[in-house]
Length: 352
Image 1 (spheres, one colour):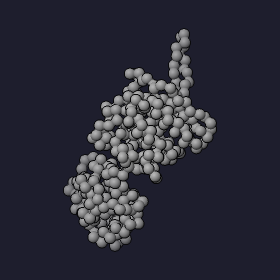
Image 2 (cartoon, rainbow, N blue to C red):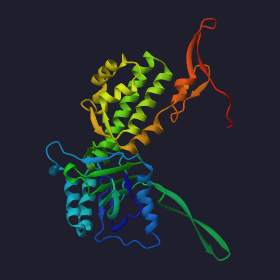
Image 3 (cartoon, helix red, strand yellow):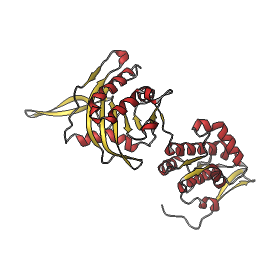
Image 4 (cartoon, rainbow, N blue to C red):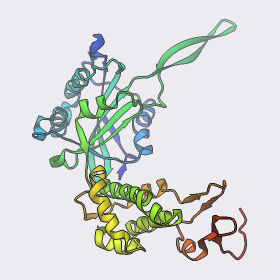
């Protein structure tokens, strides 16, 4: 988890980078930019809002041979070692970004390189480097009084409501490649930012493992539990899985399977499914790991608890009180109508 509430921008260097394949060039400011007291809160919101709204999927700098060969890792380390060097190193960062701007779809834009203090990650106070890029410009109106007439002036500029690309590099877990968060509003050039410029991999911490394992469980529920049982049992399996993660600090696969699979015959099916699909979710060799509570909360939001029937009826099961579905919902077969049915018991209807 991160906390950006008290973050201070200690330095901000502003540059412009073009598309190298179109020979648009690069403009490097000689000195850091001074931000007025009036503009500072707006700039902070512009930079940090996307990270507060985005699910926290962490990355780390990586290289197939050694981290020291990752250019951005070296530049980040140079700044963290000597924060006063941030304005000068920002030019190297912008030049590196320009060198990767070869695809014709890549837009030119402004690059903001900041040194940040008073951030918190995983309850640890740290400094960070923020790299942001604005690409898409918008038309907006300005108004000017001329004598007795109010005239409209069409101008072109950057909207502070939309950051196109950005990353936060935390001075944390250096030996593993630092912890990094990234946002990208444009999908047409995603590889350019993450792969070519930053050169990052997923940071495989407890947050990553918790999310990936629950995603794997969703796949198992859909591909195995539903065909073997029914939709209700698919939903309830995911409910039991999420509840296991929510009430435990440590994941242990044998305990997990014994607790969440009502049908023992599905345990070997689960293990076979893991052999076939585990690599897809990066959990093929995983049997134990610490559980990240925040990741469980995020995962619960994305898990459906609704049974959709082909008769245009929906049955919504309560994840907070799963025992209700176990006790008061039954599935059966009607010979006369040749149709399945759900029988739902209740004492009285609740007001909306």
